[in-house]
Image (cartoon, rainbow, N blue to C red; front, side, top):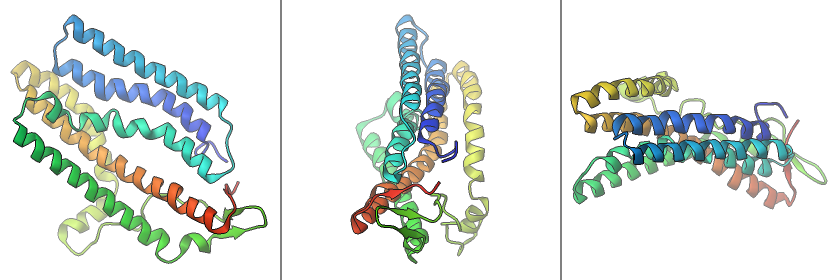
Length: 255
């Protein structure tokens, strides 16, 4: 098992990246957009302390947990190491416009329903594409080695969906298919720019628009993370477990 796929290394990486992302994408926007009163400063310090404490526990877990050889066990550890990314910072900040800016109840219901529907559709599209590419022609079982005590895949599989999952029967879909992951990369670069814009906006009194801007940028990244996690969860917790139940043997890692 190499350093990229080692669950213990992913835990150690999460120990560093989780506090960094929470501070950069959650604490800093709140500090820029809202009051710096004593109570708010105390709130910010609590979040920073909690994120660092979480990172410390993750690092200890990375030292203690030994790399398992069973694919399902690896998936459990990997899910434990990345689940916070689905909530903080992008998942929470994506709803920032609804949480931090006052709205009437009708708008909150409609906006929440729209966000939920879009997220469900995006996850459904990703899962459908994943099933079509990896399960439609029996690709998994074609690469399965069955022994007396275990089963093993001849090669590892990535949840990166290639060829493109976007149909190319329209001008927009062709553009999206050509861009692939470049859109996400561009958005990830633009997100930090929102902090500089927020400083200017706050001085101009346009806090609502700043929150909306950050929420829109964060929502795109949130959908990307949720789509990847949905495919990974389906593969490891349904496909892998289904193979283990079918052959009544554990599926182990191909070193």
